[in-house]
Length: 222
Image (cartoon, rainbow, N blue to C red):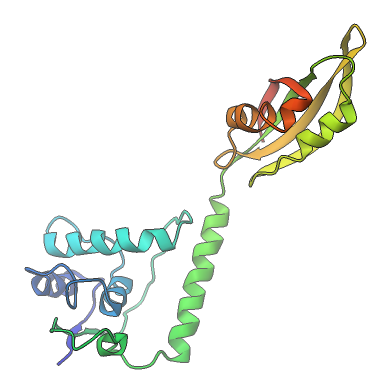
């Protein structure tokens, strides 16, 4: 017989969940199931210290779901009174068929639409919280005056990284017939480290066939 959790956004609802989880790690069985996902979605936030069983269960489910949603969420609260959430008490599994654990019936069109809206809201929030960007001016120096500067620039621009955008460039005389390449880049701060770009990409093979050294001339937040 299915157990019903009602008003999990209220203290009384959380108390019923707290009592049910006494001595249990999951809602059903000894591993995460659709029951846990259903109940987890109805709990608005991590239960407080007055609900230790529910709080521990919430953290456990959160940690297992986190790898599937790597984006940075800002938190979404849903108003209104939700429908009761039903789950089944743990029982010995008859086999590996997931249908044995699906006690909520087929997913309705309304459920699918609500799930899509939640994912869209998460994606929109993640975009708003996108990491800052920086504009960086680099000095790229060749080995000598015989270095083909066109091939040097091609080698530099061949480096591709998520969050890296190559910009305008120019050749600047250094002396003794040698010129250096000055080139602008725009980076997403959380995705690209300029030090790593220089040490691990621009001054190693194949770029080091043309590049002797690379230095940061200017670094500005956008």
